[in-house]
Image 1 (cartoon, rainbow, N blue to C red):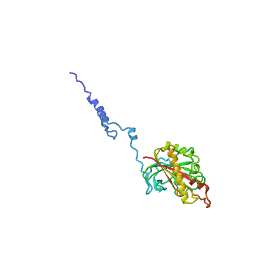
Image 2 (spheres, rainbow, N blue to C red):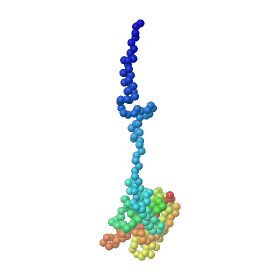
Image 3 (cartoon, rainbow, N blue to C red):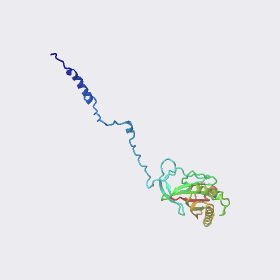
Image 4 (cartoon, helix red, strand yellow):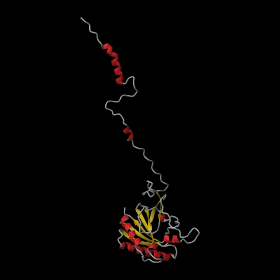
Length: 261
């Protein structure tokens, strides 16, 4: 009988090498991935949550801000409150980066209301400006202020030209409707305090009557006279002489508009 030679011995080394390669022996030190496990992708690393930004530190005694007055993307904290008379108490920002500048070479008095910031509002036909603030409770307050010389003759409480008031009513009805309005009359410091108080009260009442009779949209309208007790600017120049521009600037009417929450 013819003997058939087996080839098993010839294939044995090849099989051993294949097993070593499949099991990772003698190759990389990394463990083999388990069957069915997905390899991490670059997208997984990219979706990791970003680190939280540290909270903005406040000056001692400051309250967190409610409005971004200077447009830097952060709400401006307030450091105090100030009483401007007749119930007008407002929060004061720690830093006022866009304060109103005094006009006609006048100088603001210390802690002047006019230093407060204001929105960019179209005041065509109104000789004045708008200030913006918050009450201690956080309520919105807008203060429209205009020169009373545009309304009244010297020493008079009778309206001469109503153009300023008509245009002011348009601004209020468009931007600040349904608020409570306090009309505040002011004089310069010339004359007696009693006469100034009486004149400012009559002028404030005249403006209140005009607003309510010409379609202002408001929940209520009241009036108060403050005489010369709340000036915005100095009425004397640095050399001690009288400032005509300063006196004119302080002769004004303010409409304090408190908006509903």
